[in-house]
Length: 342
Length: 63
Image (cartoon, rainbow over all chains, first blue to last red; front, top):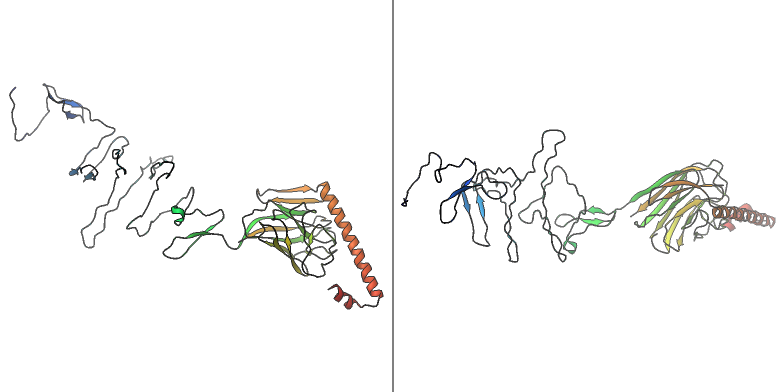
């Protein structure tokens, strides 16, 4: 057949190839090299329903732009991913909101949504997931970075859930997650907050007691500890010296002799550091307090506040347990509280 | 036999247990020491009073 050249073609019906039309919706006219063209199914996963006005493809290493995309309605998931390259840096993908040339205009947002769920109660909405790339052993995985340039604030609404580390600052280039129990403290405008030890008293544990009371496995994470004991009823407690011992059994732990000479000088009970006078039971309603600073190291200083006077002394080893007793408890009841102090 | 309320600060567990034989022995020794100290103190006070010291003078000595 002789070749014909057409300057325009206005199709009003089917394209027949070798006298046959194609009934498959969405198929494309495909070259077979030299020879007749044929209809074939579009290749690749999913499909782009409609791409509008313009496309421009830059040379290698540049940016490929898809401008004026009107709708993308594939019936399957799709991925935008530049091809792998052998150069030092892989190609990037950039999404940019449209600029406004109006003097009082507003730049366009970049908005990303997860898929909505079915309206039934059990429907689960899709997430927006941002993942960094997996890295090698030397440098680790990549970061998800938000607001590296031209960013006033990162606004999170309605809330922010942190499932693992919250690192602040630039310590080691990665920020610091602080240590257990620390709190975030502002450093004012212009510098990141820092993790600092929480100040004040933290109630570690408290208990009601009706017998001699002891605290074991005291956490070693505070600067000081304080124990406060208040009796509510002495019942048949003996009029004997009430006191505290450190790091041992209820009656056999370490004690110290007071450094202050007082009516307590005559220690009748070698197993406890007394909080009351010899042959004197505690008083209902009074607070008996023991404070130990630097208790996690040897030779810490303990201060005891009991009836009549207070005194201080040194404990040879780090304090991991405390026990309060007298020679006959007799079912005396009350409250014992242990505080950590920073 | 005395009971002891023991608070494990690490686990939060609170148990009330009987004192051990060692704790019983230590407590009885403690009570005995306290009785002896009291007796010594009372004896000393009586001797001081026998020497003619007043109650105020004895208290000032004991400081």
